[in-house]
Image 1: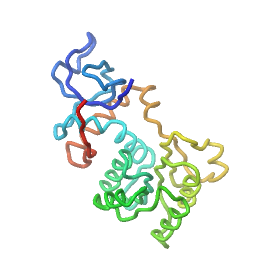
Image 2: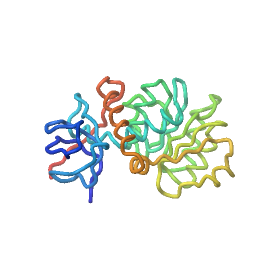
Image 3: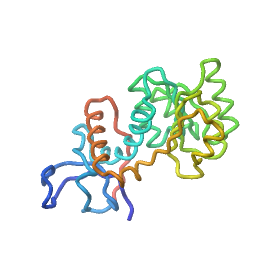
Image 4: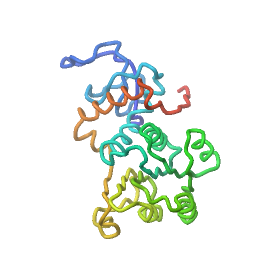
Length: 241
């Protein structure tokens, strides 16, 4: 059934719920949520940020939880770090750029069109390369980096030559954070190519299934960051059913 990320109002609770009550505004994950009423686990939701619409809150769960896990919890990205964010004009890319700017890291991004490049520039991104042409991507990245060293972390969602190219740009001991699903490398392949790199496949959907309560806590963390203004909600366009 279509739909995963959602925001809505609680209309009924189970007999074991001491956290939520009817009327609470929440956001999180509800499989098959593109309907009027949907049932989900209380472990997969958190209070909706007060400063977002339901539509904005519904865009947050997977995008921002993926970024917090990858860039904060695993790579511990800090001020001054150089982070390569592929397909940065997408949802996770937008969230990653916001996180980098929040902590003072330097996002190096890829995008697939002139319009997307302009959009990323409007967010404050200064370094943008192609996500459609791997040789051009490498040329642009090397020109932008110059003698300023290599990437501290790569948040990857591309495949093929972009993986090997990104590895060439990653410093010794850097983090390669794989969030893609297509043709991803095994641990053995990564160890053969770059044994010095810290390789992590980040799949929030799998992590959520193993530990729903962990995911609920991540939603609560996102709520705090959005309400404080440290992070901003994703831009959304709403369509009526």
